[in-house]
Image 1 (spheres, rainbow, N blue to C red):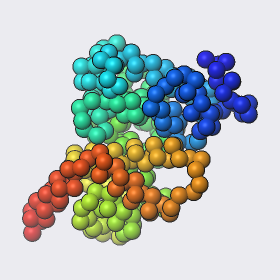
Image 2: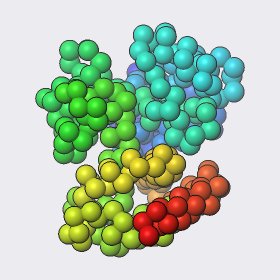
Image 3: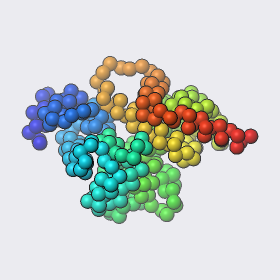
Image 4: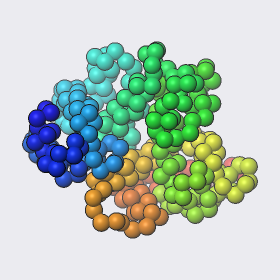
Length: 288
């Protein structure tokens, strides 16, 4: 495998760029390949170690896909969990809610699992305060341990980490300014993503004119459908970034977010607009 990697790495940089990733996929005869499947960090290049990890992940997916339908059923996920000796929640993998796991969903899950296991230094299946902080540092995010530890038992299991990670990724995508809080304009973008009438006052409970992550987390946790849509949007935006990383610069961030979200929601979850409007109407009536 190293020889194939070096063969494709024409400039001998020790990393494969986007074009070289495509050539590698062709050499390995991988059909329907997207750069985002290999470049999980959306950095535009991968080192040999990253490629090795991707290849192992790819082989594991193919082996688990006993039906050969290019997705994992609930039964196949359960069989995979038994073979790995770990617990796997289908819900933690199934971003679009179709009750099966395609390779892009599997790749996102695998990436999260790998980060979690790397920081779980004593291999007890849960993160301590120190391990959670280490994980946050590896993700470039500040960690509030209490935010992750939903059941308050003093540790963070993989399910808790997965929910926190999804929320954090979505929050970061909406926070275009990167200042750690959502302002009026960013909430407008969020409202557009979800196709709902949403104002900053609906989330900003301390009335300071912005929404921090803790407020976003409370709002997020109140509705599973909303969380599912946002997870899909964030994943699609990461994939778009990886697949287009070497193209000419695109439109401003606001237009990019709106466009990516619109495309994702329309093509993947065509019924979500009406569902969310009904949720909002019920909420409005309850608040009157």
